[in-house]
Structure formats: C-alpha cells, structure tokens
Length: 210
Image 1 (cartoon, rainbow, N blue to C red):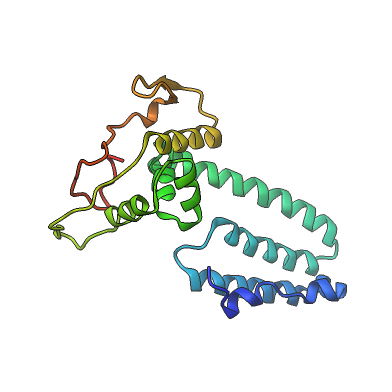
Image 2 (image 1 turned 120 degrees about the vertical axis):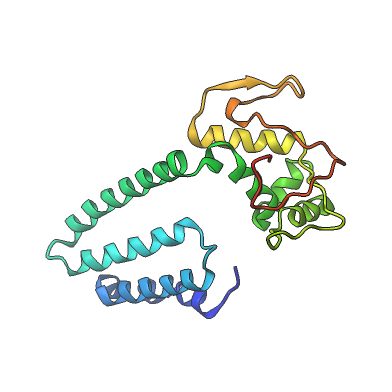
C-alpha cells in the first residue's frame, strides 16, 4: 500500500504523546473516520484487520462515553473477538467454497505481491513464471479470447503448500495420499493438474480447474 496522507493520518501519534487524549471519545471517533477513509481509498482490497481496527476504535468511543469505561471495554472486547471469529468461520466454512477447496490460497499465492517471495521460494516459481500466471488469471472482457493465451504454471510444491495452509487454518484431518508426488493433501483439494507447457484458454472467472 502507498504511504498516502490518509495512511499517515491513521498513525496519529497524539495518543502516545498525550495520554489524556486516549480517554477522549473524539480522538477515537476521529481515528475511526480516518481508518474508514483509508478503507474507502483502498476499496475493494483492504485487509480484514483494517475493518476490525475501525470496529475497535468505535468500541473505544462507546467505552470512553460510558460511566464504566473499563467494564464496557472488557465486555465489548469479548463480544468483538467472539463475533469476529464467528463471522470468519461462517464466511470461510459456509459462504466461500473457494476457501474450502483451496482456490483462495492458490490464487492468492499467484496474484498477491506480498506472497511473491513465498511462491518463488517454497512453490518453486520463477519471476517470469509468476508473471505468466498473473497474465493467465487476468480477467478478459466477456467473449474475448487471446490469440496466444499464456500458460498456467503451478508446480506441485505450490499446490501442496496451499493445501497444507487450508489444513492448518481449518484443522482438516481428512486426507488422501497423492500417488504422483507422495505428499498428503486434503481430499477436497484433489483436482486435475495442468502440467507445465500445456495451454488452456481460461480467464479468472473460470477457475474451477485450479
């Protein structure tokens, strides 16, 4: 992310310099507004923790206006953590099939610049292959086709790493022994692998074969 003025303002040092400011609801309200502005500026790509930061600041606004700020803060914190995890489980386990079958991790490893080094170091991709994969996954206008479609290069090591990430997050114990590489991966991630060098004309909207 860029160090824009909005991003800089969300790191207000006033609360660290003047401890009395920490007890001002206006301070937390202003901080909530600045972080919300950051979310709007980065839409639709802000990380989940940025949203949680807004909720936390709003909770502090309510706590500082309460006659019992410590009690309000403790109670609100418990509910915030509980609902955050509850909604996260609901989203990942029930509303996002691409998360359950591993596509989310696999596409993230290929498209998110923050994971580029992981994809190359652990997944075995080169910079050129990573660039080709991002071109492959770039959405095309409806009905459009490339004369020379790029290829999707997804080494087994990258697929295994994504599979184990799903197991780590969801604590899945159902697994299947892959005879091709001898590694254990969740049964839900058993999909047809597109070997290196084989071309397919497919855009990002049709990633069921990933």
